[in-house]
Image (cartoon, rainbow, N blue to C red; front, side):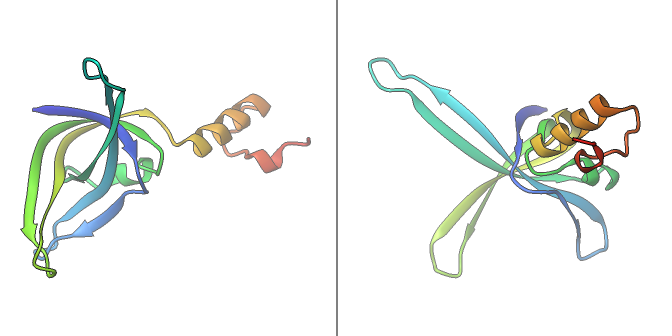
Length: 129
């Protein structure tokens, strides 16, 4: 089992297969940096097209910007496009999702609501200042 940690690029979606099975689909960006000996630092971002088949309820928590820790298996999807060129993308079939941090905007709204009062439904607009 492999593990990756990254940030969601966009909100998760529920997709259906031809045989009506549902999955949660999302894309995760994984940043990496290293410094080869005698050279400048190299920064890379890898994008993984992820699928979670264990249930669809997790979709609501998987918003753009959320940092997740995923456990599952990595695959490489290679194909020949309609343009005649060969393409490939990394896929990740997640069997377990751990949410490390929520999306920044959502986290700030929740923090503001908690600081203002104990009503979890309060938003920034409800505050008197």
